[in-house]
Image 1 (cartoon, one colour):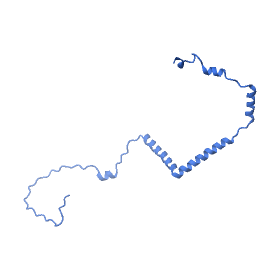
Image 2 (tube, rainbow, N blue to C red):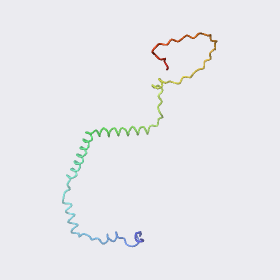
Image 3 (tube, rainbow, N blue to C red):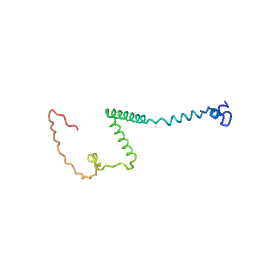
Image 4 (cartoon, helix red, strand yellow):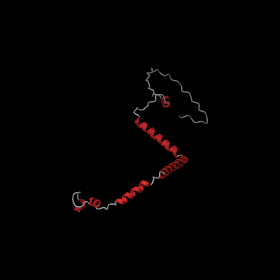
Length: 141
């Protein structure tokens, strides 16, 4: 296993050896290839075709998304992100509403004042008989 973890200076350096022994092309071949490359004009139509193809695919995708409402959903998602970011950045404390329906309905709890009553002697009064209407039960609450 020692040979597997050799450093660069130890043993064989395969890359250096392969580069040194690779075959070199003849000068005539290099010159002929260079002339051929310079003679042929570049074809610019292929690049234009690629751009047109990508544009057509993008337009088709936009039309398909518009047909099912995907653009509106994407726009509302961007708006939701903006609202969430604003809520995170907002450094104000909570807003306290002083006049609200709950405040007008419930208000402040009433404090009961203790009233001292003078106790008077009650006169003995004969209790009147309560007359009950027939057919209806008493009101219980």
